[in-house]
Amino acid sequence: MTIRPRRSVLYMPGSNARALEKAKTLPADALILDLEDAVAPDAKETARDQVAAAVAAGGFGSREVIVRINGLDTPWWIDDLNAIGKAKPDGVLLPKVSSPAHLQAIADRLVDIGADHAIRVWAMMETPLAMLNAREIAGAATDSETRLAGFVMGTNDLAKDTGARLVPGRANMVPWLMTCVAAARAYGLAILDGVYNDLSDAEGFAQECAAARDMGFDGKTLIHPNQIGPCNTAFSPSEAEIAQAQKIIAAFELPENQGKGVVSMDGRMVERMHADIAQRTVAIAQAIAAHG
Image 1 (tube, rainbow, N blue to C red):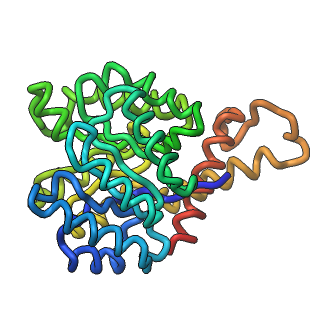
Image 2 (image 1 turned 60 degrees about the vertical axis):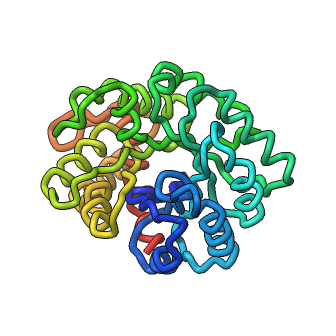
């Protein structure tokens, strides 16, 4: 089981050279170097050049490096993809994906420029149509040419376009969040939760991280380095969870339990599916430890 930690995924503005350099020292599992929302129109070209140079130069260690390009409805996306494709990041994040056709446009362009096939594509799920088409968008992963690796929730844009309010607990957004989680998991994709805007509300942030973890998200996108630590903690298995998982795995590995679908452990019945969950918990813990 190969798992890459994506607990904390920090947005960094591509127009800020100091931020790009600082990103190499932060304890985030992944970075999204942003050419879209964080960059003003008159700074797009400079940001593109800076990000391409930074990615090509490397130095990000074990951090996964993803570049968010501008959307297909802008005049910048082709130049973005041309430059970033040559720099070879781990992934490209496409904003406002509302149908599989948007992913196909990116796939076609990556083929045209001969981009390394190791570059993955991530889809921002942030429009009403994306919520309605989540299954079809995730299903594009069955075509390897789309390179689709996962979803990133864009909850701010989703709130803007639907008129939904950003309220504590996000009860009004849970149906959309869970729809995207289900679609992603149905097709073997990773999925990241949206950002938390109030940097002064540490308790609210911790609660939202815990809720996202419980919903099944792999991690959360962040807007400030101060959010990395609490986010990593929330999405890491606890020592008690790891110990319990190891105990379940060991129980099913006993000679007398080989081939059994259910075993008794500590006075309760444990099914083999719990052993599968336990294997994933241990694999995540090992991946985090290896990540450093």
